Length: 126
Image 1 (tube, rainbow, N blue to C red):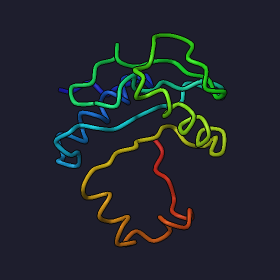
Image 2 (cartoon, rainbow, N blue to C red):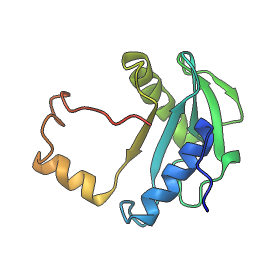
Image 3 (tube, rainbow, N blue to C red):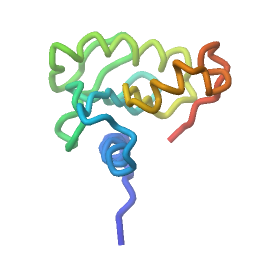
């Protein structure tokens, strides 16, 4: 019997593993994932590589982009602002999964997902 992840950090780790288990991720493993903790804070992956992600590879960040605990790798520092902007604009979101997977990129380039390019596509919540 598998235990369901309960904390936002556990859900981020489970989501990262699920991306690989289902073959969505590219071999590079490059992605950035976050999950909202409350109205003002979220957890964010500390590096841009999520293959084998562990809970200790998450940092707590506020909506102003300040890292509250842990540290971010230099390549992930710029991602903080992107996740913070989306969290501020969409308070209903539970998390963000930002990948450069080949399938997602192909769909975006071919504009096969209605609303993807004009921002009207719905967002899944965790």
